[in-house]
Structures are given as structure tokens and as C-alpha cells.
Image (cartoon, rainbow, N blue to C red; front, side, top):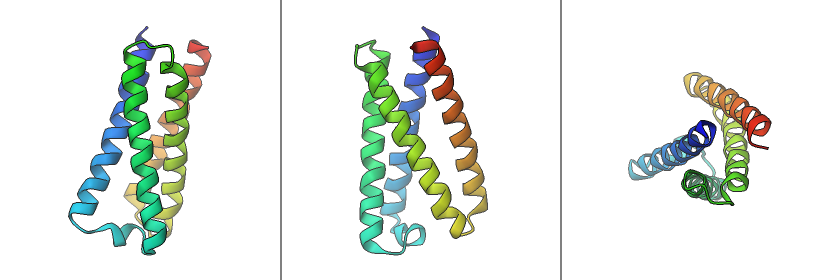
Length: 122
């Protein structure tokens, strides 16, 4: 089904983009500009990499049409949605308005994709 392909590609892309973003931030040593408190930053970045890993794995499994693909897709979408909403709050306080706008649009796309997938895949 085409929706499973869209879902799989979406979570893989979300996972790769998130991981790449944090790799660039860490390599350029800019992480303190995003989250000042080191303890909070370490766990935030760890959570983002965990979400990225699960999203990529879920997307691959979904594209391979494995029976665990759909449940893992919904787990990944929940993690992505949580990460997006959390990031909106963090970056709103820092007045990164363009980033917040991108995150809001991404959140809306994610919610729509979850709703459509629930309606058609269940």
C-alpha cells in the first residue's frame, strides 16, 4: 500500500534529519546554544538519538512489510510528535522563530499523517 511507503519514508527521513542535525551541532560544538544546562542537554540529545534510531528502524521494518512494522511506526510517530512539541517549547523561549515555525509545520504534518494512517491502516 502506498500509505505504508509514505509512512516508512517519513519516519526514516525524520530519524535521519534529527540525527544529522545533532551530529552537526555536536561537531561544531554549538549544543550549548540550544540547551544551556549540561545535564539537561545530555539527556535531551540522548533522547533525540534514541528517537532517531527507533524511527529509522521502524521505517525500514515497515517498508519490509514485517508484522512489527505498523506498531513500531506508531511508536516512532509518538516519539517524533513528543520531540517536536518539546522542541517548540525549548526554541520558543530562545526566540528562534523560524525554527519554531518549521517545528509547528512538522508537528501538523505528523498529526495529519498519524490520523490518516490510523484511519486507513487499522
